[in-house]
Length: 127
Image (tube, rainbow, N blue to C red; front, side, top):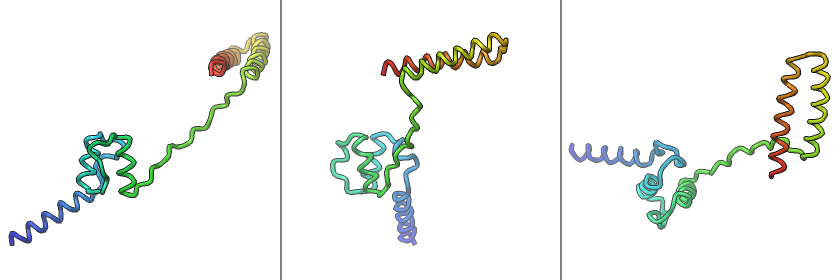
């Protein structure tokens, strides 16, 4: 009777060990990753001396987890400084006509666009 209970307990412990960790691997600390790698007997050599950036790919490879690449960022339309300055000149002309027609809403929108373009052109010039 006691032997059956011990067998059940050892089987439950094995299932818990094989279960996926509670935290995602990326969120684990180095100490947690080391303990995880040692507990799983993944066959990784030198676990105790590895750093997180070395240990994480090794564990993922041993478990057969593919490392997802971050989604590619869509590059913002940078353009050239000259093109931006031309656009600013056109917007300023538009703003003058809006001032003449006393369209306050359009004046405000154009003012913000011009300022935004000025900031972008300064960033592009620095880069």
